[in-house]
Image (cartoon, rainbow, N blue to C red; front, top):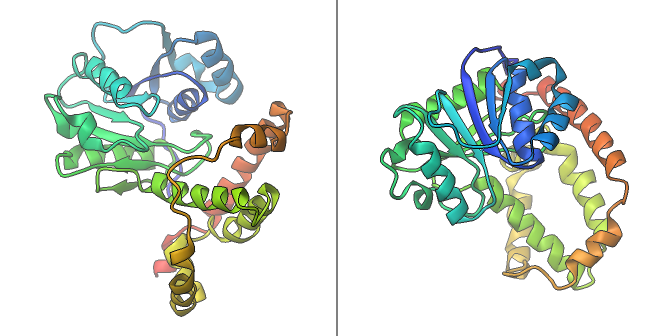
Length: 292
């Protein structure tokens, strides 16, 4: 896996909150001129000075939309709501040149709903990140039959060569990561709600089993290491009993508040340190040697 390369291309980012600011830190770290449109300039600058202070000279902060956007890629980070995403995409589409990529986070919304009504729908792609975006290798590109293959290739190449990511493309028009995470969360909630396990037990089980091997291999390579026969036997008996809940249990917010450490600063520092160390470990054991 290649180390990030510095590049002179310009990136436009629109969004509020830590995820958007961390994405900006990622592009700044790649040596890209970055224009960030956000409602909270103070919070954005505070985050970027903390995590990417050496590159803030490449940053332009905006509080309102410019008339024209001169950039290769525009990245939007919005709430997972169709109306909000469509508004931002329309704002971008009328300001960008025709070959510029519009990349927007989309977890539960199919890509075709966001492409509908856009003059060049093929350049609108889903782009999902993992917190903290400037530290992790995760990058998910969501595409469908309308997607321009050149746009996909340009975005994944930028992710790999400039941003230091290990990108993949979900061609079905929806996030595969979101569905995997939702399945895990639904089963965890079911086990806690019905008294089979505590929150602490769930967290320890995930960290000490799946959390041990997932930085090295995914589910399918793990099956290869462990043997698919055992998986087949377990799933045959277990699958009919798995949760099918379609809503979050009542009172969950109160339970989580009591479970989570109140010291946010300490949590953030620990997670920052962990993110650096786990990235180094994953890079030490990349996928590629397993294929040789």
